[in-house]
Image (cartoon, rainbow, N blue to C red):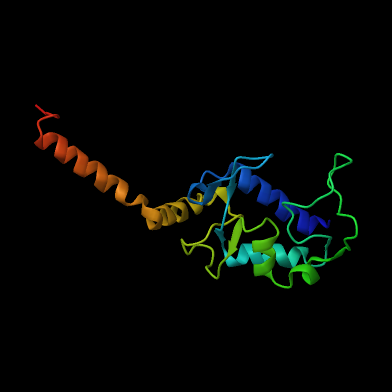
Amino acid sequence: MSPECKKHFIQDTCFYECSPNLGPWIQAVDSSWRKERILDVPLCQEDCEDWYNDCKRDYTCKDNWHVGWNWTGGINKCPEGSQCRTIGDVYGSASNFCETVWSNSYKYTTHKRGSGQCLQVWFNVTDGNPNVKVAEYYAKLRGGANVPQVGLLLLVSLTAMGILNFD
């Protein structure tokens, strides 16, 4: 794997393992090697396009890297009978690559970095983490915005019933 391509997979691993902003996309799974996964994380267009463009001349024998490897020797090897082809030939586009390589962990978007609607795998930490606002945006879309309202209604109800007293 070329250094240009490898850097994206290293960053992807760091992002997956260390990002505190993936909560809205974590799904429970029942597999032998993990109990959770991310699904349909909206990647910024530039991050996906750069990743694909830096890797499209590298080779792979599979489209979905999550499953189907030959692990009999203790390391992952291509399945018997598979053929190595360029990533560009296997996937054909940045969107197909980003969505397929990790079985829909990522969702290709046309949103740009800084839009507040896509997660950035690459960013300068001295400028702050732009993914905080993105995670908040999607959490609200999925109903997280109602949590304070429910809490307020409960507080008002308990006060009205005399269960809570603020004297």
